[in-house]
Image (cartoon, rainbow, N blue to C red):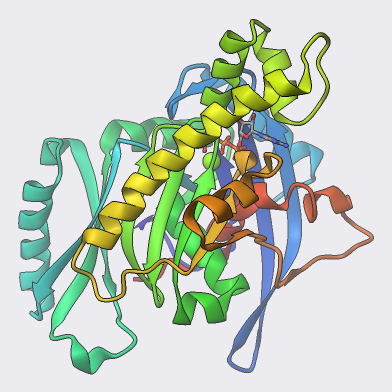
Length: 359
Ligand SMILES: Nc1ncnc2c1ncn2[C@@H]1O[C@H](COP(=O)(O)OP(=O)(O)OP(=O)(O)O)[C@@H](O)[C@H]1O
Ligand SMILES: [Mg+2]
């Protein structure tokens, strides 16, 4: 999206509010196909409250953690692609009649001014033209308009620069996820209607894609942190203990029934919020309205049974998104934990590393 250059190989750097993830891929063309292999990978948890709801509070800690991820995993490539999300990023799908490029640029500025809830001067606007599978059906141009607050872009750019990385491109989380889905689940994304739900600490990114065409985007302000806060309040335990419980670790004096009740309430809230978005989508006048697959990613997707909770609530096939399903790695070089247990955490970073960002 907000790309600065195109050709360099980059490290996909996902600066989350809970953890930093980095992935570097090697790619090789084989006939029509692009084959990917993991070159480098790294993960580090941030100090608590270093980033709150997408706002960088403790820059020094974030810079330090980024450097640590690179140094400890011997990632020498300094060129990075990062992503932003949350309420200072707006994604809108608009439809315009076919027109010349110059005219289009003007129309897009007009649309941006009318569709974005922030002053135009305070935002950076970019767009991409969607190419429907059957071009003959569609005389209009479907365009994805992305606007991000300049101050958000500036703060994430500063952090990256201060961590001595070269910022090559800024994406949004949901597009990085779509990229990684296209590589790993090409048939499903081409032929089905699916929802990708990235359950982070502060933000849950949701995108609905119909036969490869993104239809609806939401960044919900909820995630694992809210679960942890609620558990800590409800069970009268520390934040750290609540976090342990969330990860399935035992905590003194907490009975399984208490935990189950506490978790259940949080899960139901989450499912209800997602149901609202699904209903909104189903009520919209798009062509195919039935969601056939749900793919979960992000730290909270590791919550025990969450996949089943989704499956039961919506009666939809639910899977955990494995960003490395079709991406190979040298088994001798890496800790296998990255590719099994931790794989769901790397959806955004691996998507950023594929750099399929051409317009
Ligand atoms: N095994 C686990 N079971 C349940 N929850 C987990 C597990 N591991 C991590 N989490 C939770 O997942 C969240 C972190 O997920 P993730 O690393 O995807 O977030 P992030 O990308 O840093 O945050 P965000 O995208 O919201 O800014 C935390 O709330 C953490 O408690
Ligand atoms: Mg995240």
